[in-house]
Length: 276
Ligand SMILES: Nc1nc2c(ncn2[C@@H]2O[C@H](COP(=O)(O)OP(=O)(O)OP(=O)(O)O)[C@@H](O)[C@H]2O)c(=O)[nH]1
Ligand SMILES: [Mg+2]
Image (cartoon, rainbow, N blue to C red; front, top):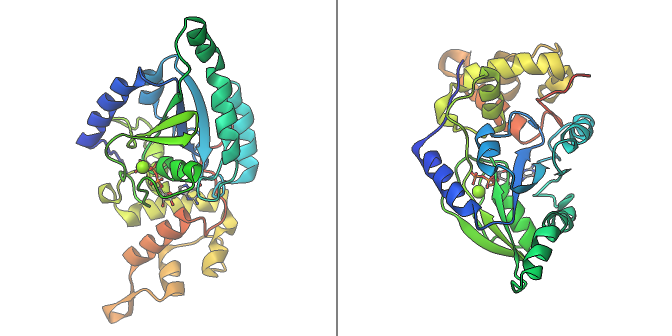
């Protein structure tokens, strides 16, 4: 199964980010804590160049805490990084101090040149559905920008004052034209960062069930399935998904599995691993 998603509006987003980049002092790159490697867009690394950056792993409430700890240590070697949960507000208070620290030198230099003090300009970037808009709402304490549990909710750019000295630009999610490793496409589809329209849910679920069997064999408990080998048929049976003639509706079972996996109902799961 080869999943790819790079719709036309993303090419536009890429242009838009490039244009805005010169106005911003620091970038927040929002990744998904369940995918600390696969949710990082190589295109963004290229666009951002040497711009100051804070990497934030969001949705840490859904990720396996054992792996989050290890990833933070690893990623910290390259750039400043923190883990948060935008919807639960966990870790979010660390953000402003980190941003301040990242731009102190730049603002002091400007001051020395006689430029009047101004707000810090921050741009939030990341792949779709990582919680950029939710984070902004958490920082401002209100529903100021639109969020949604599907990729591609934010379309235009929007500046929001998140602190008396900090302005933040929300941007649409950006992917890249080709996932070289098909496993990356599957993982991104599993967490909901590519459109559900571009893959077959039953096929993805079959892959996900194999993956879970290998890495989180206890996940099947959710469906009260005795065997640690979960199947769509067993999920369908447990949930009474039947079609005419008493056959099991495996499409419905796949949709249930994907939805509950994304909501964290199968447990806290991290799909990208480091060598143990
Ligand atoms: N469990 C959990 N869910 C979150 C968290 N942050 C965001 N979400 C959910 O993830 C979904 C996507 O959030 P958005 O803020 O719209 O994501 P986005 O990055 O702005 O998405 P695009 O605009 O499509 O690029 C929503 O259903 C949020 O409620 C989090 O920390 N934990
Ligand atoms: Mg958004």
